[in-house]
Every structure is written in structure tokens, then in C-alpha cells.
Amino acid sequence: TPGPATANSAVAAAATVITNIASLVTNDPSLGDGSPLGLIQDAAVVIDGDRVVWVGESSKAPATDNRVDAGGRAVIPGFVDSHSHLVFAGDRTAEFNARMSGRAYTAGGIRTTVAATRAATDEALEANLTRHLAEALRQGTTTFETKSGYGLTVEDEARALRIAARHTEEVTYLGAHIVSPDYADDPAAYVALVTGEMLDACAPYARWVDVFCEKGAFDGDQARAILTAGQAKGLIPRVHANQLSYGPGVQLAVELDAASADHCTHLTDADVDALANGRTVATLLPGAEFSTRAEWPDARRLLDAGVTVALSTDCNPGSSYTSSVPFCIALAVRDMRMTPDEALWSATAGGAAALRRTDIGHLSPGARADLTILDAPSHVHLAYRPGVPLVREVWRKGERVS
Ligand code: NIG
Ligand code: FE
Image 1: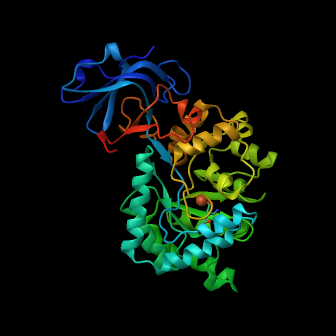
Image 2: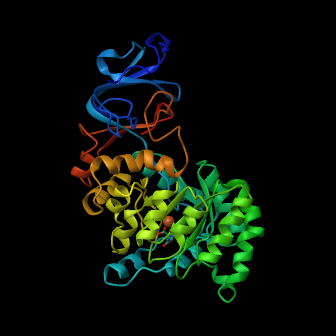
Image 3: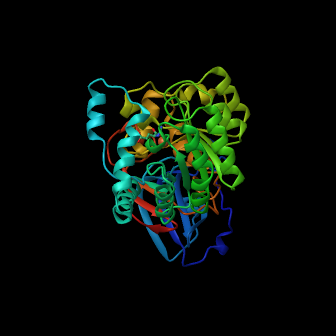
């Protein structure tokens, strides 16, 4: 049974109660129905400052000065989008168009965005980032990770991260997105740059180091060199792994205790075993399979093996130009054999796990007050009513922001 984790008397009168919530996802299995979602029916949430201080049944909510009536709607934690590439310029409509008439996706398209990004001013890059962030926020994303990877020079990678760091703490150095076109004849020299001067310039702005481990990008040995160089500078690895083909990325990620192996579309049994026995989260990015018309990652297989699964957008102008977590949830449920409960968990608590965060992705007392009021009585509607704008109100750090 749900109960106050903070005594009612300890709740400041100046707090805000959101009441008349038909169904509240807490992601705390010690609350509510005891499922992983910790669902509470007819619930209330009390927010003080930027934190959740109480959750439970509406009838037991402490009195506060401010009362918000959720009108019998569902409340869920804010989405944690743990994988995006939002520091870029230009678009790749023509490439998408060609793909939809039968052309295959390759890493080569990244070069188009690299050229546009290098040519853009700082102001243009930041304006583009801000525009996409506002778009994501309106769709319920309250935390996002974003990467460099479209600069591929010391200066252009560092400025991408400098700009990103003004908007999120979850900044990832991806100088190893592809071998810079300037080093096409000498990939080893590019790896030396990425692990040397470029890393030195980028590390101060980043929390994470990432590499695209794939044919046409970086092989296992190069990826290992890049990730361990990042670790030596205090960055934590995350890996673009096994997206377009089978390869060493996933097992390398687990071996290096990466926070996340992202994509995980082509997995052997040994890859799944490695994930099940390690603490690396598998982040699935169905927007990429949608937009590249590729086969879906097998979420069911990972979940049944006991792997922690996160669900994110991979928002980028090439392989997945969506900022919508609800869209990804609908795809995951329809095509990746996740249940609506699993997909919601993966897009909130799963994303937090992929970022090694405990303050977000759930709504138990003490959590950051990041939440969404849906225009629906239950979170299941996110998959049941695909494409419908169900995000009604977004609250971040205790304040209504959308
Ligand atoms: O995650 N896989 C590598 N990077 C991106 C695609 C980037 C692009 O095509 O511009 C991804 O899908
Ligand atoms: Fe990506």
C-alpha cells in the first residue's frame, strides 16, 4: 500500500500538490501496486522546490497552499532521452528520400552533416539545439544527453561540447563518430588525434566518451583505444554498438563497464549473455530502424535475458530525425515486443540507468520533480494512441515548463 515516506507534518504549506491523478507511474516498486512501475491509482504528488516530497492516494495527501487538479489524467516521470545528436546544422531530406526509394543507410551520410556543421556559426548551432530541445520538452523529455560528432576537428568538436554543456549535464564526446574526411588516407592518425589533442580539448566539457564501433567507422581495436583514453581522462564510456551489423561493440562495452551499449540491433547469443552478466544498459533506438528501414532490435530477447533496457530517440538529422519519445514507445510496443509498461519504464527509469542517474526517471519522494501530465487516463495510451499529442503539461525541477 502506498504511504507517505515523509510525514505529512513535514510537508511545507508552500508546497504544491497535484491531485486527482487517475494513475501515477512512480517507477518505485515499493509503492502502489508493487509492479516495476509502482502504479498508484487515484493518486497525488506533492512537490516542494525542485523535489517530490510525497506520493500516495489522493485522499491522504497533506494540505498545501497550492493545488493543481490533474482532472483524472495520468502522470508519468519525465522522459530521460539518454541518446541524441543535437549539435548539428543542415538537414538530410534528400538522403531520407533516396532511402525511402530503396537506397541503404550507411555511415557515409554523416559527412554531409559534418560539412554543414563546420560551416555554421556558434549562434546558428546553438539556435538549432535550442529549437530541438524545446520540441523534445513539449513531448515530455525533461532530461537529455547529447553528443559532439559532427565537427571532427579539435576546434569543432570542442565548440559542439561547449555549446551542449550550456544546456545539459549529460554531454558526450563523440570525436570518433567517423574518421574525419581530412584523414581518409590515415585513419590511425585520426585515432591519435581523437585520443590526444582532441580529447584534451573536449574532456573538460564532457561526462561521457562514445565511439561508433561499426564497419565504415571504427573497429574494435580502435574503439578500445578511444574509450580507454577517455577513461584515463575521467570520462565514462558509452558505445554505438552493433547497429548496422554484428561486431565487437557490445562485448567491448561490457568489458569496459560502459554505462550503455546503444542500438544493439544485431546481437549474438554471446552479446546478450555479456549484457545479462554485466551492468551495461542496452539502449534501444527504434527511431533509427524506422528511418533507415532496418530490422528492429529484439527487445523481448534482451528483457527475457534480464538485461536492463533503455529506450531513446537517437535524434539526429541522418538516421533518426525524431525528438519524440512517445513515438519511440509506440514503435517499441508494436514492433519490438515490449509491453506498454516495459516501454514506459525503459523511456524513464531505463534512460536514467543508462546515464547512471538516481535522481531522475522515477517519482518517489526525494526524486527531482520532473513529470508529465498526459491527456489520457493511463500511460498505456502512449502506445495505444500512436501519433496523438498526449503530453499535456510538462514539469521540470518542480516548475511547469510546457
Ligand atoms: O546513432 N550510428 C551513428 N551515428 C548516428 C547516425 C548519425 C548520422 O547518420 O548522422 C546514429 O544512428
Ligand atoms: Fe546515435
